[in-house]
Length: 422
Ligand SMILES: Nc1ncnc2c1ncn2[C@@H]1O[C@H](COP(=O)(O)OP(=O)(O)O)[C@@H](O)[C@H]1O
Ligand SMILES: [Mg+2]
View 1 (spheres, rainbow, N blue to C red):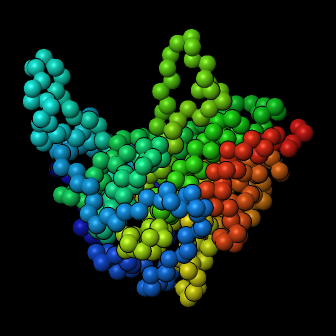
View 2: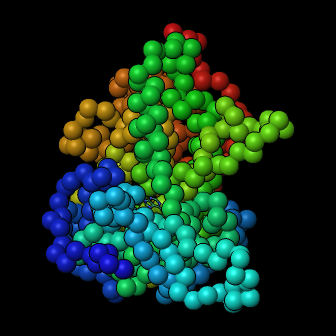
């Protein structure tokens, strides 16, 4: 594919805020094909310590889908980048490792079923896809590892409802090919917050999540369910949960008078899908699948990282690498961003201060309340009731994703928002 070759010189690795809000990246150490560490941040453990997988119940451990994947699903169709009127590739977004382009995929072989198709039938099977291509020299192995994780996830029952559809790894360009889902939760939050900002303050709704109470609860339940599936069915830890790693697929609403379902005011109008598995780790307790993933996070984002993630990166910390409980924290932080409308949680804070607060992340609810939109997370309101057990300081004491699914489905947590009014 023309113009899709990765840059040959690695970019400077240092503290920076990427397009997707990502703070710090470092290269994974495990996996034979991975490059050695290239950043002075954090001491990377050469031991393969796996933080114990938080005990799933009998029912869920039997549902865990175990698979040892050594080669990724290959994408063999042709890719043709979509160009804008000035001849530049159309970009969906970029992250710390990659740029994601819009492209058309064109089948290289005519499927047998099409050979007998009469000429009048449409045979143009090209489709629009998203191509995640490396944007720096050391990203190739990261994307290859991500392709293995995505292959495993795509083989795990239920994946359609939880992750961005994966079409395969395009070896020639070291790129991942996925369904195009061009709206990230981060963009949605930013755009919706801008609209709300320009409206007069409504006292009736000033203590509600800015998405609206019912859509927020709906989004929360769906995302928590997806995290439960990821940890307990697929045995994978995401490693970089944040609003930028969640893509929104519109829910088709059937037109017509019979349509009085909860697709109106009560539901979030999108299916949230987990994306960006570049920092994902195999946390399956199945020894057969050891070695599928790296044991250190390849990147993380400070305002959304659990406090233990930051601690584990300190030189000589001696702390084990983070486990699935860190995802639970990150999703709680993501849900707080979706409640306040502040996509990076602490508006107006510089990078250093945000990092300091992230190190004390268990106080996140108090921190949030010290900012203007913190009123949208009232004390003991339903947002706090759902989030509190997920931001507990000790990862071992934190609610597990599967317990959290139970809480998100309980009606009692949604009772009232605990506020009498202004
Ligand atoms: N399947 C997709 N369809 C459309 N846009 C996407 C898709 N996957 C990623 N993007 C966009 O590209 C950005 C970077 O992708 P991401 O997977 O986060 O890369 P990185 O691993 O480099 O952080 C995302 O924040 C999102 O905006
Ligand atoms: Mg990303």
